[in-house]
Image (cartoon, rainbow, N blue to C red; front, side, top):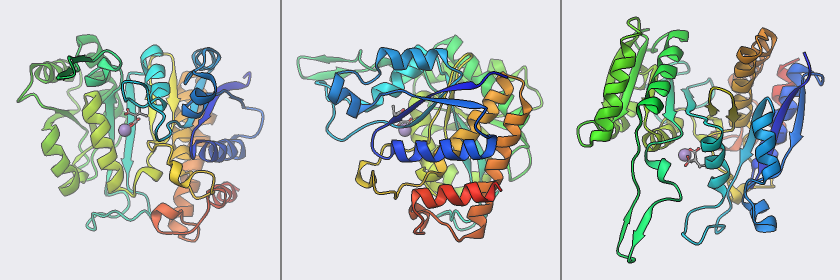
Amino acid sequence: MPKLKIATIEGDGIGPEVTQAAVKVLETACGHDIFDFEMVPGGAGHYQKSGQVLPDETFTACRDMDAILHGAAGLPGVVYPDGTEVGNELHLQLRFRLDLYANVRPVKLLPGAVSPLRAFKDGGIDYVIIRENTEGLYASRGAGVVLRDEVATDTLMVTRKGTERVARFAFELSRARAGAPLDGKRRVTVCDKANILRSYAFFRSICDEVARDYEDVEIDYAYADAITVHLLKRPDFYDVIVAENMFGDIISDLGATTVGGMGISPSAEIGDKHALFQGAHGSAPDIAGQNLASPLATILSATMMLRWLADQRSAPALAEAGDRIDAAVTQVLADGETVPHDLGGSAKCTEMTDAICRALG
Ligand code: IPM
Ligand code: MN
């Protein structure tokens, strides 16, 4: 197999540290002959220098290479005249232009990661949020209207095509999983506010249509406000949750907090042709450059990249390398000797990375 080219955008804040950690772990697990990590610029810092948050050559690399690995983007105070953040634009443009419609956010309690929900032990929380990633409320990005400095509107957009494909993605994923920890049932929960807005009622009705093709998977519904309660009280009931863009954004941070925080929560943004992998966290400028960041979210996102590439290229060895990295992370966490700052330990970013590489053997 020719080398796989990975468009690698380190970005801002802790982005470079966590990206380098993931690259090191990937090379330890897979050797040096599998990947070419092509470093390409982008982010708020790059915008300050060049006026471009996502330069054309970076976009082209992301479009033409085999996958995208990203650290984080965004710096405080780097905003557009309308007040919105520049760093976010990198991500949002890639989502829209490469049609990365399914944002996959696993919420899984690993050993050593203490949940604030004391009743749950490792494995007791294990669900995946599928966030619709190209429409919903965020489709209005850059196109909202501010009238006479008095009224502002952004439009919530839900399409049949957009909902159908993301719902299908969720049902397929549930089929590939072992069901909810509570009862082993394969279940897709539709998260919406169908009780209030037509657009959400439409979203739900499309999910219902798709569900007919998956009789082996239970369909379940939760309003977005109510699910914030359920995710704290009975997280083990959930297997796969599909949500409109903004709701998915919000509940994935909530879910992450129940399994140890953003520093351990991976994310994959997947379309039919392209995919981007990045930890669910931001650029954390307050701790950037001090070797304090946890690389776990980025490393676990990289294992999602391995599985996706394995599927795309029919290369099971890549998925197997992903399993080995996941196992190494689990082992390091379970040993409890090398623990990152955000999980109550004192291991530096590079120490976490080295411990995982050692566990890989
Ligand atoms: C996320 C982030 C993003 C969002 C940014 C980086 C555009 O919060 O991926 O959840 O708001 O969608
Ligand atoms: Mn978010």
